Amino acid sequence: MKLIILHFLAIVNINSDPFIKTLAITDNQSKTIKQEAYLVLNTKCNFCHSVKKNRTVFSLENMDGFSKAIANQVFIKKKMPKGRKNKLSTLEEEQLLNWIKTLDQS
Ligand code: HEC
Image (cartoon, rainbow, N blue to C red; front, side, top):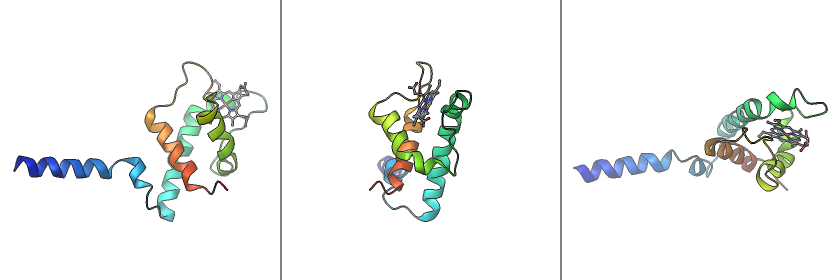
């Protein structure tokens, strides 16, 4: 009996992995993924960008167009979010990556 419960828990855990969720993305799911990513941009980036001159303030309307610049700054150059105290959590990084993966990067 215990083993069955453990198995069940393992399956539930695997299904809640955000990376696995992206394997089959429907339109509705990618909207949610985008909204989650927007929340990260709005809480971890906009507070600073909005007070600096000539910095992009990310919105649901413009964020797709900045996905390459965001991927570059956050994951390749690792310059953003600027400031030692401004870090993204693993979950927030996954949320940004999931959104970037839903876009056509060609
Ligand atoms: C504490 C302030 C601060 C935070 C937080 C911050 N940025 Fe920036 N960002 C800057 C500044 C200042 C620049 C200008 C380039 C530089 O100084 O390195 C910049 C430049 C950029 C650029 C290139 C120019 C532009 O405005 O489009 C991108 C893309 C960017 N940031 C993305 C992000 C993302 C994504 C986050 C959140 C995950 C973030 N930044 C968080 C201050 C910040």
